[in-house]
Image 1: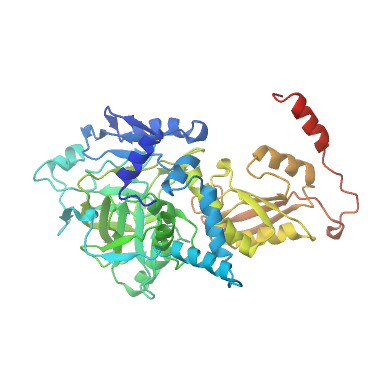
Image 2: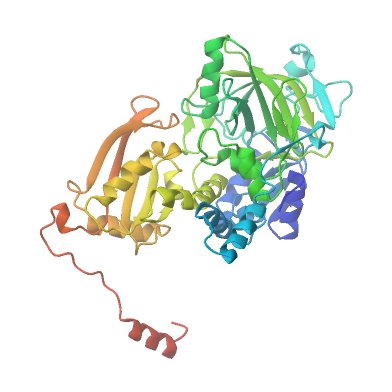
Amino acid sequence: MAFGSYREFVERLDREGELLRVREPIATELEITELADREMKKPGGGRALLLEQPTVNGQVSPFPIAINTLGSWRRMALSMGADSVQDVADELGSLVKARVPTSLGEAFKLLGTALELRHARPRKVSSGPCQEVVHRFEQPLPAGPALAEVGVMPLNSDPAPPTLLNLPILKCWPQDGGRFITLPCVVTQDPDTGARNVGMYRMQVLDSQTTGMHWQLQKVAARHGRRYHETGARMPVTVFLGGDPMYPFCATAPLPDGLDEFLLAGYLRRKSVDLVKCLTNDLEVPANADFVLEGYVDPREPLRVEGPFGDHTGYYTLPDAYPAFHLTAITHRRDALYPATIVGLPPMEDFYIGAASVRLFMPVIRMNFPEVVDIALPAEGVFHNLLFVSIRKTYPMQAYKIMHGLWGMGQMMFTKYIVVVDDDVDVHNTSDVLFRWCANTDPQRDTLTTRGPADVLDHATNVAGVGTKMGIDATRKLAGEGFPRQWPPILKMDEVIRRKVSERWPKS
């Protein structure tokens, strides 16, 4: 199901009983984080929040804030127009496994699959709601008395133009270096191939027209930036917020470099993404976005200090140097809704977003590793720290093959710990995995350590971006692995007895 705006998605959540409206004023400085964090920590992710009167430095913003909109399995499924994320994964898996038809019936089945893809490719349009209200910045704005005193100019105050200081951008945690845009879809383009990338990188507001751009060393946008730095040319960058909820989901999805995120979004929403050209650069953004921030990064400029920031690691990311993003235009819908999220000690909204990505791309993983049964990223591992994987083990050292293979797959290069278990283990049951980990391993024999790239947000590594990794083989051991003893069977009740007891004591 395609949503015409983020507001339309939020209204759907309201009808489904998945939304809590907060009608009284609430501050974008810390208060929204505290309320949202309490909701996210509830069983199943709580409910989405619509904050109808967010305040910026005490002044009510004309733009409501939506937060935690993707923070449950139910809301993730609703965002995809499906009954469950697994249904979408199964459908995508059928496309991945498509073969040359061998019968007329199979040919019709493949034709139906192809028709499902007819809306995947994005299409260009001449205008869209995202440009209903336009403000261009010809020159950097001076910090006048109003900016110096309160740091805000209300959008509905004439003639004051909209700037980054008007938007209801959150200051999330007490020691944050400022306000951060937390759900931005950042559009960049490879200067050599023209390939587009849509990523998500936090953006700290530095002044009315400037933010930091926290694209990390290994990110695609950072690679684009390095090419612009080599040529000395100004790099066009555009950021959009809102629109269909599949946009931020696809911006965080672990797609291979060069695969257009709008192609995936079109498939998931079952409708092509309509793209409109920006007004001050040649990049394209979804016509139904809520906000568009057009601008550039100048590679000739010195980097700017960004941070601290209360991050998804549960710790503050310390200040570091990143490129500055300069605003050339703000455009938005007249009824724009500002989407946001917060990160911090798990579980948070980002757990469901990341877990849905893993589930969605499981068919692709199984194409490379057919022995993989399931994969889980426990919330406690904050994505990059811990991965559980179950396999159908058929030969010696197979667990180590899986470890090395997963570390070589895109964002999984950041995973610090991989635990491999047998196929009868539910990797989503952390207690079950920990039991097998402790029961099936000899620490010296079954532990592998190696070196590789690390998440630059990982404060525990000696050097930013470089660290060590550990793999644990918690599978049953085979004679071919040098195990000389007989492996014992695990305790399991006879199925006949189980059924008999269930029939006699159904409530037990």
